[in-house]
Figure 1 (cartoon, helix red, strand yellow):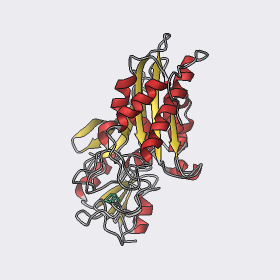
Figure 2 (cartoon, protein in one colour):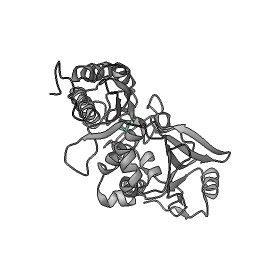
Figure 3 (tube, rainbow, N blue to C red):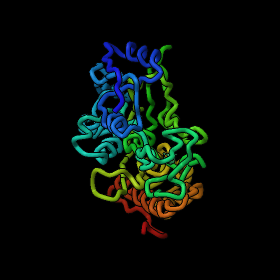
Length: 343
Ligand code: SF4
C-alpha cells in the first residue's frame, strides 16, 4: 500500500476544504470498500479524509413527511430503524440483502452509494480496465461477464453498480444531498450515478471536492406496498446477478395507480424501469399486465456475450415481485392470472 496522509476534519466544511485543496484526497467513513481497493492497488489516495466521526449519523423525520438520513448512518442501523422498516420496507430489505452483518455494521449510507464496481478486472491491476486506468481497454468484453450489464453499457465499459441500497433509493425517488465549496446541492438519486459512455472512470456526478452529507426520502405513499428481491449465487454475502426494487399502489378496483420499479445488477447505475412503470399504471393488476411491463422494459436490453441469461431472469423477477406486491396490496382479493405467470 502506498503511504498516505491521514486527516480527521472537525466538520463537513473542513472535509470539503481538504478535498478541494488536495487533488489526490479521498473521503473515508466505514472503509469497507476503499480500504480493500487501497490494498489491491486500485486506489492510491495521497490524503485520506476521515469523515466517520462527523455528526452526520442521524435519521430525522422532516416536516414534509419525508426522512433525512445522515451520510454516516450505518447500513445495519438504517435497516433496523423502526420508521424505515415500517414505511420504506423496500429500503430495509435491500440493506439487509447486502454483504454480511459485520460489513453492514461498518458500511455507511454515503459509502454505500459511492462503492465501486466489483468487476473482477477492475480489481485486478494486472489487466486492462478503462475504469481503473482510462484508455487501456476493457478486459470484460469477451471475458468473464456474469456480473455485467444488459442496459446502458458502452464499448468502453460494461460494468454494473454493486449497491442494493441504491436500487431501493432509485425506486423511492430519493435525493442525494452533497456539500461543496459553494454550499449544498440536491441530486435525484436516479441522476447521481451515471452510465459509462466514454468516461467509465466516473461512477457518479459527484465533483472531486464534494461530500455526500445525507440522503432524503420523500414522504411514504399512503397505501403503497414495496419490496426488494435479489437473485444471487448464494444466500448471503453475494452481489446481485439481478435485483428488483418496487413500490406499488393499487386501488379498490384492482387498478395500479402508481408504480416505481428499479433494477440492480444490470447497469452501471440503478436502472429505473420507466417503460415497465408506464405499462402498468392505470391498468388492472394482473400477471399478464406485469409480463407485458417486463417485456416493454427488456426490449431495451442489449446483453453482451455471457449476460444473455439475465434477460429472462430479470423478466421473471420483475413479474414475481409485482405479482407478490399486488397480492399484498389486494389482501384477500385475488390477483388476475389470465395469461402466463412467472416461470
Ligand atoms: Fe474495467 Fe468496466 Fe471493463 Fe470492468 S467492464 S474491465 S470495470 S472497463
